[in-house]
Image 1 (cartoon, rainbow, N blue to C red):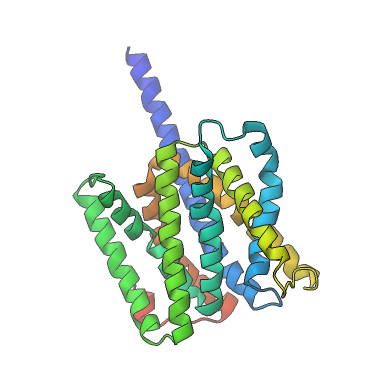
Image 2: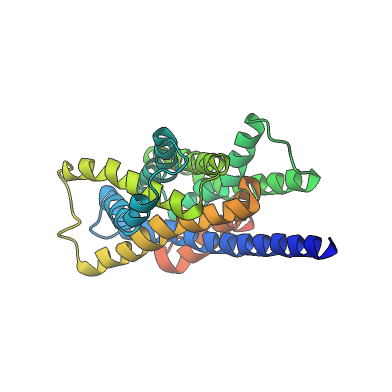
Length: 284
């Protein structure tokens, strides 16, 4: 019996360790998503070109998974809901926001607010708080987000405020995806495949009708960078890794890891995008 308990404890430890490693990788992918998207929008590529790369490449890569597993235990509306929350809606809202607001706004409003939106959704759904330490953690994250956002939002233009609203909506959408995926108990690879393929099916027909397509006339280097980051690492990889971390740690814990993204994104934006934060933002 003791051997069985020890084996079970070791399995739980391995699962948590895997979840933490995946969560750390998620932080790196989230930060690169904001930075590479902003960088891509400074080239000849537009918002819908980035979305076409993300959905097209990841959808093609993961199509064999969908063809093999189909929907499994999910209903079509469940799979569509995952795609709208975690792919189609989230990415488009992010790209519009990145096109109108600085990278520091993206790090704060998308990923910095993720723990707060997840906390709100969990409370609305009736989930109990894990303890005092979680409440303190959420309060500290809220304070940091407010400090980082205070000055930048107060000096925003009207267009930047529209972009900020899109980024907040994207954060809420991604929080909803985490909660929904956890409730459906869908496997990480299957979730990533469904989100990518359904998003591709929803978006690419619209993209073919878009009059200002630049994807086929843009410099090859610009396109290849976005193919690697948007299509492979972010479009397919981030959803897979996030859902794996979600299965190991739960939506509340994985959302807390996202609190590291604003600081990392803000620091990386200094050399990459020449966006220098204020003292208040740095303190946050």
